[in-house]
Length: 170
Image (cartoon, rainbow, N blue to C red; front, side, top):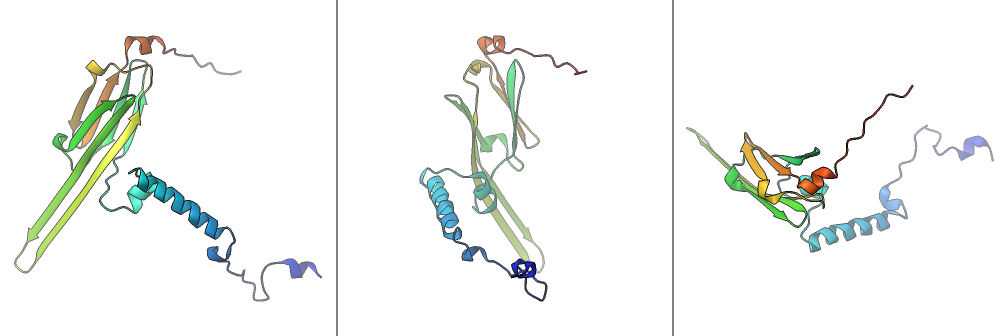
């Protein structure tokens, strides 16, 4: 046997195509994927990838969370919605944003009629720190399709915050 016999291409210079279904691990991968899909389905949960790409009727807003020593700020992009379309609740140590997006367009012209409807609901759960949020001072503002929820920390949580200075190494 020569070294040339060990190279995995034939004399034409092309590499043989290996399909995923020919692999002994492909059925295992399919079963694991099915297991995860059924898990999310059974608990009425929506995995982010599936929600965005494969499930029609699901709207998944982008969310940014920032924190300082005195408060947390949650910003959600909700284009096409109004403050009436959004529900905000605090439960245990979580902020829950939910709502429904409804959009209907209708155009009529001399020789045409175009109608479109889009609907989608969303529910995002943002975990909050256990040391506490001052629930009496939480405020929400909706402007230009952007929801901003400000969650001031309790006095105890503020005391636990310690800034550590960073020095330049020499």
